[in-house]
Length: 365
Image (cartoon, rainbow, N blue to C red; front, side, top):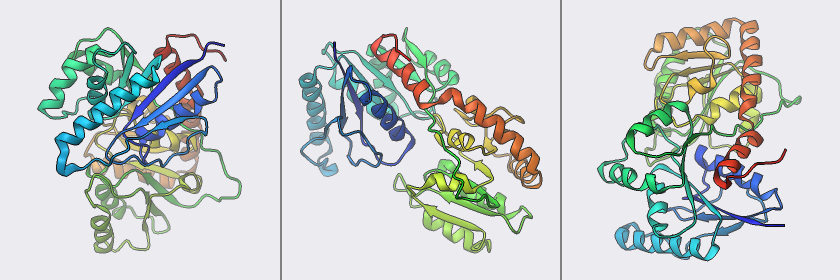
């Protein structure tokens, strides 16, 4: 049997949407005997939050990245990446991470292995003058650029010239119903506690809803050094919502929250592809989300699986939540339709699309 070598490259597998997708792909590829899978973790933190299979080969630099010697450590990391990929001699390389893809493409200059890159953020987001310029120069050298949405492909086609821009959505893991967990009057939101998720706005919206027996639970923890958890806790105290709003932190049992909740709320204003919206739909939850760039409109069908609300229209967001709170039948209908819709983003379906693109091979069922 001809064994092909796939090299997956990502800064880390810490808790996050991009990292979860890479772990799903790693598990899929490692389950096929015709592949040998290598995973390179080269970022500032090389932690592994998500479960990866035992038969994967993991490569991590033998030095810590010292920010006090940033230039020297950047050069060392570039050299590590280049030497490691040369040693592995992969048939294909798949790299995730908008800032990091430039790094991987630089390390591969002059090497013959094809490199496929995928940004996992808001597609029209500037990465700064240097990285924007590098992307325009380096991305056309990639074997392919994998976009998360059609909107992203349109934006990228204007940013840089490439003949192989492909759209592949994120794999959405199936959230199975747990018969041991009863539904409660809970509005759930899941996401890192960063400014662009606007959890403070969601808390204020919830404070204006007259539904005393309902709770708002936010699953997620501080990230990007923003330290918002303390600010959100103060806001909850200020609004007198300590008994009705819970900051649940980073959780491994997030499936239990999907199973307990009745509604999912998403106030993010900047996304690449919101995995948690898909997971909520997989769990049969109706979703209220801002129609941000990009992703929610690829998942939610307005007034069929949930509500897409224009960004910053807080009154419309509040009205949508109130409609769902008051109408159990509507929640059931939206949840049912969402569960059907999201099946097209199953892990197997999406992984097969990645497989076909990065290996230029026909996959078997």
